[in-house]
Length: 437
Image (tube, rainbow, N blue to C red; front, side):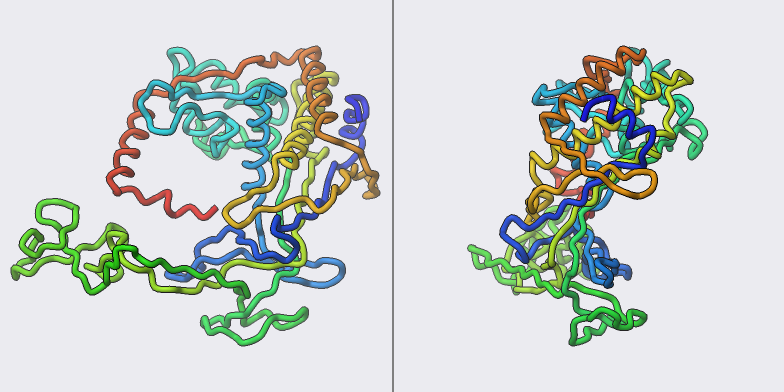
């Protein structure tokens, strides 16, 4: 494929897509662990996301293994790896935290920030002496639209490819908003499940296709075990008290804070209300063996990748036809490079969820009438295609950067990070523990 062919496809066809089968690295039907999410009711255990999907003419249970949002983040990570390897340059924004005495934080880029170039990290940073979004460049970004998205393409094209929304700016929800042009997700197909009644009672059978789904909910037929033996042999009969005059713990009653009746107050770790005064509150003692309905096996996994030409055609970069074509080709080449690089880097999604491609599925162009045609592509070819598209976009009039746009964090931004790290080191954090994926 060359620039001319890609440009023609964007003008005439519907999309590029690929349906790549994956398998666990451990081999077909090896148990894997997709992400977990909170249960629907309070105190429900964590669960996987189950869906009924129609595959090959029958309805089967599937599990979401990597969501569209998570895949977008991983594809951005792949592009960031290309930048750091100096294999190609992709315009992006960087906030430089070096020299700010923050543990483990050096730089944050627009390929890492949750809301891309419109993230609060950039909003609360400086371009020269001005707040970024109040600078001339920032105000141009806020005014970007489908009618002219040139400034986003020049500063952070991944924001157009994966979608972005300036939701915190002037006008609130009416700020600059761009839909995704690229969508990818990974799903496990034909997953064994057990059923749970609407009242939470386990039902002793496995669902077959066509069974009534109105009164049951799926839970994983897989099981995850957990336990721990404390090498110190600390037993749960030992009492732990709240130390007098502080948030620390003590094992001595004479050193403990007393209630109004003079009784030693049992220690309870913040946000942990079960079993006050037990060694488990201070992470000592054995963990009783337990079993959770987590982990799955499946017939196969599939990554479904779609680069929508219709979405690209909605993007304009002014009224010049040549510039519009060049901008869309650059974004398409960037998307192809992202998923090709992800293949090369592998699919280590999370602990005990390491996948590998099952063969090499072809990329297909989907024509306007729904028919398809295979398009041979490999990573070196796609990288060359991107470099050509980058050069062609420059020739068409885009002011593409050859270095990242660097911002300086405001003192107040540095301070809230520093305070947060202090609380975390003191064991007073908590929010990040709630993340499920």
